[in-house]
Image (cartoon, rainbow, N blue to C red):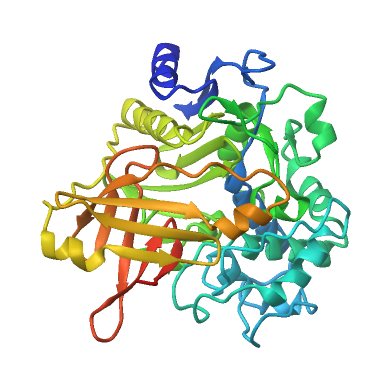
Length: 434
C-alpha cells in the first residue's frame, strides 16, 4: 500500500477525493488523494472531514455499551423500559440487543424530516407508529436505520442529554476525537468533503438530524482510525468481547457472516474480522478491524456510485499487504435457463422497486427508488443506478458480478411450497410482486 496505489485506484474509479488510514505493527499510515469538491477544490488531507454514513452505528452501539458498563442499560431489557413512549403497528417487545443486531423486525426507516431541533429524535420515534414491520422479532436480521435512531433515543432518555451531547460525553471527549462532529456549524468551519454523483456535486450535503444515530457523523480519517484503534484496545471498561459475539447469523451477505452488537462479523481467509460500511449522499466509507492481528484499515471516498468498489479495492489491498489475508468474491454458477426463469420478475418494498431480468444468457438486476417517493421528496434524492449483471450461487444465493456493487451478495426466499417469494439485498427484503 502506497500513495501511487491510492492515486491509480482513484483514477480507475474516477474518485475526486479520498483518504485512507492503516494501523499495522503499532504504527499509523495515512494516504490522501484529490480534492474536497470539484466546484470548490481544496486538497484532501488527514484532517479533512467526510461523512461516515452508517459507520456512525458503531459509535451509537458503543455508547450503549458504555451505558451498559455503567449499569444504566441492560442489553437484554425491553426497549420500552428506556423508551416508554414507543408505539408501533403492533404490541411487539424487543430487547436493546435485538435493536442493535437488526432483528427487531422494523423496516429500514421513515422518510419524514422531523427538523433540526433538540426534539428531532423524539419526534422521529413518534413517526415509528406508521413504520412497516417486516418480520417477527428475532426471525431474521433486517437492516434498520430507524432501529438505530431508536437506539439514539434510548441514549437520550437514559442520559437526559441530546444524542449528540451524550456521544460527546460518553465517547468523543474521553477519546480525544476532536475532529468528529455532528453539527453542521462545526463542520462548515473546517475543511470538509462534499459528495459527488457521477462527477456532479451531490445535494443535499446531509439529511435530517433524526438520522444522526444511524448515520450522521462527519470525521477525519485520522479520527476514524483513532476510533478503530480504540476498538483494538482493552475498551476502557466497555466489553468489546460482548460486541464481537455473534448474535444473529447472516445468509448470503457480503456484510459478514453474523452480527454482533453494532458490528458485522466476518471470517476472511481464515481470520476473524469486524467491520462496518457507510454511505451518504455521494460519500462512502469502509472500516475493517482484525483484532487478533492488531490491524485496522479505513477508507473514505467522495464519489458515487464507485466509492464503494474503490473502498473495497483499498481494504483488500491493505489486508493482503499488511496481514497476508486475501479477500475474494465467490464465483457464480454457470447460467442455467430454468433457474433464471424461476428468479426473474418484479420485487418491491416500501422504498424501492426491483426487477430481475433474464436476458437469455444471464441475469440483470435493477433497483429504483419508488417514483412516488422521488416525486414527493422535499430534497433531491440520489440518482438511480444502472442495472447490474448478477450470477446465481448455491443455496438460493446470488452475487452482483460487475459495476459499483460488484461482490454484493444476497439470497432468495421460498414459501412452504418452494416458490420464490422474496429477495434480500443489502440486508433489506423485497417481496415478489410478479
